[in-house]
Length: 121
Image (tube, rainbow, N blue to C red):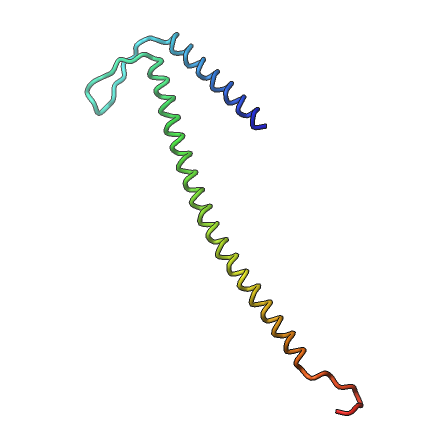
């Protein structure tokens, strides 16, 4: 199953790379880009603008995914810590319960045996 997933990942990567190369070869027209607060302008090829925007989106999207993973991992660590504390409390409670049961059994064995009805007391 893992092999199939990697195989599909390689196929998708190769297809995307081929599509980007074909796009870059066929779209070499110049486009002027102006950034509002700056006075100047840039003349870039259309393929450079498009692939730059795609790469910027991938980096920003990857950063957002990474941040969500960090939040999930910190929550996981906190829950593991809480689970560890709960397990410690459970083992302490089990040991106290077994100690109290042993004490009850000792009390029952040390108590005087019951007398028969109507017999000597």
